Length: 80
Image (tube, rainbow, N blue to C red; front, top):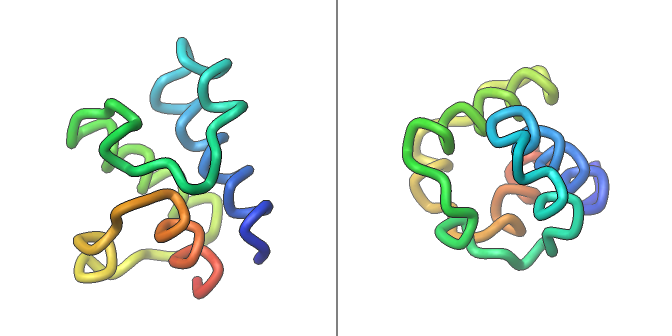
Protein backbone atom coordinates (compact mmCIF):
# COMPACT_ATOMS: atom_id res chain seq x y z
CA UNK A 1 0.00 0.00 0.00
CA UNK A 2 1.37 3.42 -0.94
CA UNK A 3 1.42 6.40 1.38
CA UNK A 4 -1.28 8.03 -0.76
CA UNK A 5 -3.51 4.97 -0.40
CA UNK A 6 -2.83 4.95 3.33
CA UNK A 7 -3.66 8.64 3.58
CA UNK A 8 -6.96 8.00 1.80
CA UNK A 9 -7.83 5.27 4.34
CA UNK A 10 -6.80 7.54 7.22
CA UNK A 11 -8.97 10.37 5.90
CA UNK A 12 -11.92 7.99 5.52
CA UNK A 13 -11.44 6.65 9.05
CA UNK A 14 -11.27 10.18 10.44
CA UNK A 15 -14.47 10.97 8.55
CA UNK A 16 -16.17 8.05 10.27
CA UNK A 17 -15.30 9.22 13.78
CA UNK A 18 -15.58 12.98 13.19
CA UNK A 19 -17.87 13.48 10.16
CA UNK A 20 -18.44 17.16 10.95
CA UNK A 21 -14.78 17.87 10.14
CA UNK A 22 -14.68 16.09 6.77
CA UNK A 23 -13.54 19.25 4.97
CA UNK A 24 -10.52 19.43 7.27
CA UNK A 25 -9.73 15.75 6.81
CA UNK A 26 -9.93 16.03 3.01
CA UNK A 27 -6.89 18.32 2.90
CA UNK A 28 -4.91 16.80 5.76
CA UNK A 29 -1.22 16.38 4.82
CA UNK A 30 0.62 13.19 5.62
CA UNK A 31 3.09 14.95 7.93
CA UNK A 32 0.33 16.04 10.33
CA UNK A 33 1.16 15.18 13.94
CA UNK A 34 -1.39 12.84 15.54
CA UNK A 35 -1.72 15.35 18.39
CA UNK A 36 -2.82 18.06 15.91
CA UNK A 37 -5.90 16.04 14.93
CA UNK A 38 -7.61 17.23 18.10
CA UNK A 39 -9.14 13.83 18.85
CA UNK A 40 -9.60 12.58 22.37
CA UNK A 41 -8.28 9.12 23.19
CA UNK A 42 -11.64 7.44 22.56
CA UNK A 43 -12.03 8.99 19.10
CA UNK A 44 -8.42 8.18 18.29
CA UNK A 45 -8.96 4.51 19.12
CA UNK A 46 -12.20 4.52 17.09
CA UNK A 47 -10.20 5.84 14.14
CA UNK A 48 -7.57 3.13 14.62
CA UNK A 49 -10.36 0.54 14.79
CA UNK A 50 -11.82 1.81 11.52
CA UNK A 51 -8.37 1.57 9.92
CA UNK A 52 -7.87 -1.96 11.21
CA UNK A 53 -11.22 -2.96 9.77
CA UNK A 54 -10.51 -1.32 6.41
CA UNK A 55 -7.07 -2.95 6.19
CA UNK A 56 -8.33 -6.26 7.61
CA UNK A 57 -5.59 -6.31 10.25
CA UNK A 58 -4.91 -5.64 13.91
CA UNK A 59 -2.10 -3.31 14.91
CA UNK A 60 0.07 -4.35 17.86
CA UNK A 61 -0.31 -2.08 20.89
CA UNK A 62 3.45 -1.53 20.92
CA UNK A 63 3.32 -0.14 17.39
CA UNK A 64 0.46 2.22 18.22
CA UNK A 65 2.27 3.67 21.24
CA UNK A 66 5.07 5.08 19.09
CA UNK A 67 2.90 6.89 16.56
CA UNK A 68 3.76 10.56 16.24
CA UNK A 69 2.34 11.55 12.85
CA UNK A 70 0.10 10.36 10.06
CA UNK A 71 3.28 9.31 8.25
CA UNK A 72 3.95 6.85 11.08
CA UNK A 73 0.39 5.57 10.77
CA UNK A 74 0.77 5.24 6.99
CA UNK A 75 3.93 3.18 7.52
CA UNK A 76 2.03 0.93 9.89
CA UNK A 77 -0.69 0.47 7.26
CA UNK A 78 1.91 -0.22 4.58
CA UNK A 79 3.37 -3.02 6.67
CA UNK A 80 -0.07 -4.52 7.45
